[in-house]
Amino acid sequence: MIFIIVSIIIISLIGTLSHFLYDISNHNKFIGLFSAVNESTWEHIKIALTPTLLWSLVDAIKYGSKQNYFLAKFTSLAVIIVLMPLLFYGYQLFTKKDIAIFDILIFYIVITASQLVFYYIINMSNVNNTIKYLSLIGIFIIFAGYLIHTTLPGKGFIFKDPITNNYGYKGHSEFIKKK
Image (cartoon, rainbow, N blue to C red; front, side):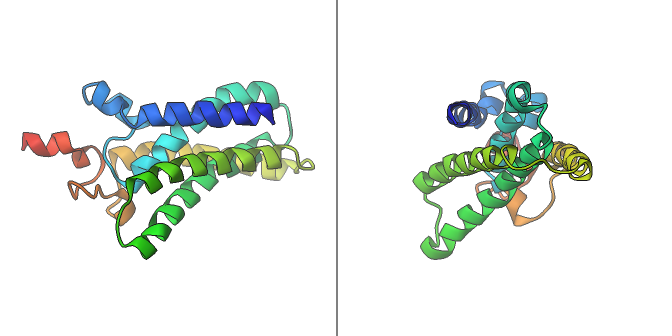
């Protein structure tokens, strides 16, 4: 369990940093693939996915030989994708507005939930090979979708920057200033 607590702390720190990396990198589009390029819900999901995927390089050393590893990793990523907008839009149903402290807390709650789900699944009884390989495919689909939705974002509300009303790189406030 100590490993999971450390993972929560490190993923949270990297995710927090990745919120600012695009600006720090002088709007480098490659960096933007892995960090927030605007204030949309999708970009906030992405800054939780980035460090969770990076952490795979570490947790694979400890757990990669376990039969449940890919299912645990896939599910932990799916938790981020589902839980972040659910909590974000859920509290706004009641408050009717965005509250920054809630947004920040949601980010850390989602990372914690993701890692606890990973820990739970990694310690379950072994899954069969079909589930293992489907989970691996799911991880690749998430990663591909993650990259695509930054470069070619959908036009749904989840991808729309609430400040600029634009999408993807064009949703960044610096892009609007140059017009």
